[in-house]
Amino acid sequence: MKNQKTYVPTKSTIEPKWYVVDATDMVLGRLASQVAAIIRGKHKPTFTPNMDTGDYVIVVNAEKVVLTGNKEYQKEYKRYSGYAGGLKTTTYQDMMDKHPERIVEHAVVGMLPHNKLGRQMAKKLRVYVGENHNHEAQNPEVLDLK
Image 1 (cartoon, one colour):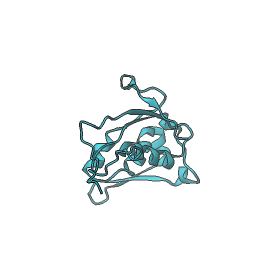
Image 2 (cartoon, rainbow, N blue to C red):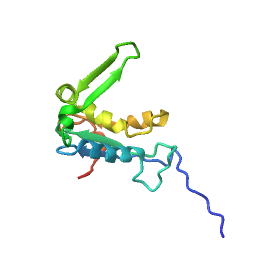
Image 3 (cartoon, rainbow, N blue to C red):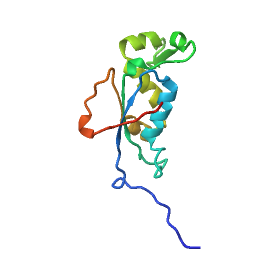
């Protein structure tokens, strides 16, 4: 048997692409899991778990994402300051009215690794309300996840 080497990508060989995803009428969890896989690079044959081999994703129309069941009325977003009585909760409805882009960001980042590499990968996500984004210079490809 011949001695074959395992291919390990390096920073110089990784060339990230840019994709645009339209979130109109997409279920939040399904959208987030597919976007997280692209950001991690799991769709590439050169995927390496300990490296950031993923691509950039621009999500537009974040305000048009949908939830299934009664989650629209029951879902809450919680954050804790660390102090006694410092738990703050925000309903899905309030978050959708004020910051709809944070709903998609929260869902995608929750599906990335919870470490330093995951925080680096989270910077590859751009979420916008409406159709417009300011990344035309990157020549993003339209990605149909439906």
